[in-house]
Image (tube, rainbow, N blue to C red; front, side, top):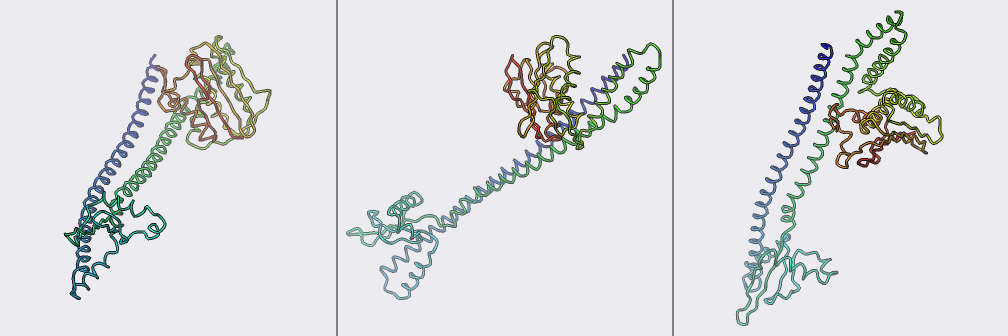
Length: 408
């Protein structure tokens, strides 16, 4: 009883340490995201206000320049003073940025315009009229009265210069830059988070293997001693099986975090052995079936201890879903470029809301367990065997099928 209590305490502390580690990592990642988001928002707000202020100043300056330009036009029309004419002409020709369209008092477009796309004016009959409508929405015209009776006047409509357009578009460009900056930094943080998560997984797995190593080696010695004692002929072999099982588990944990050596093995034989092992412990109310489509030897490069772990996790997951009653079907198909393994059960199924979560660490619908089995399964298949594993189909009350795809 004392040993069981100590083991339970150790398990509780181990589990709490795992949860605390992941919680700290998630909080740190969230804090980074919050900080980056806040900085980005402040940058965008400051940029928008500054650009708006700057564009207002430039717009006011351009309006003033247009007024000066119109005064110069008036001087050119009315003045006979050579000095004034020269100055007005210089001012008039100095406008090379602000687009202007001249109309008469009835807003009929004349042939006088400035700083517009001459190619568009020539090729598009509606270009001037469409541009004039834009200028009317942009600002009030500056009117040059030529005669009061009869009333004759020129109206000068103007639009924003290229510089002013650039200033107005600057916040959008800045926003795009900030957005990509945040995306890149978040991807980097995500990669760092995943890397650290992997280190935690690997470290804890190796520590578990290390902790199990010494007592398992001791148990092996005790088993050998039991074999030599008369009367233990039936007990010793069964205990030896469990010890060998512990050795296999230790080997599995020891391989997590380092790239295992892949060997060419017969998948059918491995799956059959694991299915037989689970079947003996599943009870008579669960039937097992293996369909290989007539094949007896399907070879693939795998790590046998880790691949056994994958099949074991899927079979145990199926047993839990069926609650001790139902059937499990495993199919292995040798396709042209891939090997497809389906593990189907007649259990309670997975809701659509949970299908995307089944491989997440900590997710479990069971009251017991840490929710790590399918997470480790996915890691073994995708990282160590460069394959795929996913929920092929699931229906509440009818069962679930997990599919493994291995490259040949």
